[in-house]
Length: 508
Ligand code: AMP
Image 1 (cartoon, rainbow, N blue to C red):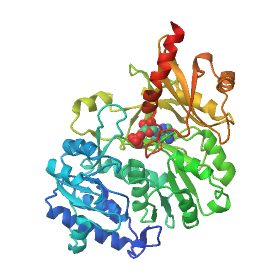
Image 2 (image 1 turned 180 degrees about the horizontal axis):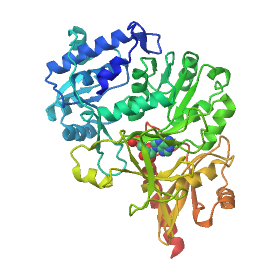
Image 3 (image 1 turned 90 degrees about the horizontal axis):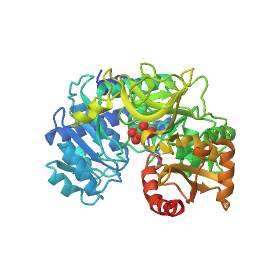
Image 4 (image 1 turned 45 degrees about the vertical axis):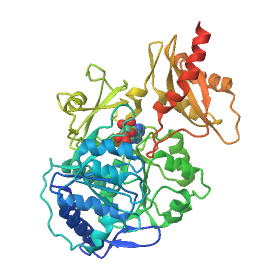
């Protein structure tokens, strides 16, 4: 089934019921959202959009963005959400690559109109307060009742990967990918009438869009749509909610807030975490403070969600749980040999959730799939005897020191147990002798002066010698992107020069 009819079929019979709430108390009913999407679809069609056309959007979060997503689905267009942090020159690449018919952008964003023109796209604007040329044309348009016919295999969206190395690739996601994944998650996480989800994630990323928003659309409501994460605001609204989905930083920031208590979370039934590793310590601390065990899941732009800890059953801290129904996972070595439980290798996945390929990159697509259809995720993982999956880091973050493999997470987990460490990121830096040396970038606990030698000695109590950090760098905050992912490539770059020069001097 294509996504739009599926969503409409799941809305409550009483369309006056709210589907979106905004922090200022505005309620958007199902009828109002559908009407807005139908008018917006009319505007897109008037601007030449036909099924299969791309509609790119670099817009700040508002309920109109959800109307735009639905409008794309109604016209059969391929929705192409773009990170609101992208500059005009970055946008030029995406528009040049995707060749959208329409490019929707925030009226306040500089240089976007010029990029739309350069790419031969119709430029329309959409602001957060119902302003902009698209919003105004939508107000004036009559609702277009037509809903384009799309099949399971047709594209619903292209999401560009974060592209920390090399060119960002457009992951082509079909109606079947998005519909099947949202239905599965809706089912296994027990979504039901009366659920209210705190939505503080961006709407340009798979987590906020295809997990959080799609699940709640399939639930027929209700989303509390916040422009961004703000611990005060979240805690203020929590009594109205039953669920939250977040990246690990949401949880560490909530833990830093004195307002996070059992009482404050008493209406909540589910906290989900994903997009970056949740430290076992965070999981444990959150349970101690609130009585809730965070449910961690794992996915990526290319695959939607792959694994999840169970709703009922053992939510195992530090793991990403079990494969979702219909999803197969395995761990392989570089030569595609399937490894037994307990051995670390690269995780591969197959299922209805896995994307169709990279936009206009057939060779890259072939490279990243095995002949039997498994997608090579690039995440290093281990599968336990009982099926629980643990992610131990990205393949490219793996450190090889003196010929030994070091999975950063193992070292980070040990550092996290030390009271003087608030958090850490472990990276490999070029070393003349070892090839790479293990380095730890540490955020000290508040008020602590780090004794580097003591930290290294404590780490050595539980880690093999080759895994122990050779050097420690201190920082006030780890560099993270909007999805809470630590930017290890940037850290490697920042620290490599000074470290390698010093290491060279000490070796020679
Ligand atoms: P993205 O495509 O931006 O969603 O990033 C996907 C990547 O985020 C995955 O390939 C993993 O490296 C990482 N990731 C997502 N969820 C988790 C998780 N629960 N634990 C560890 N890493 C995760």
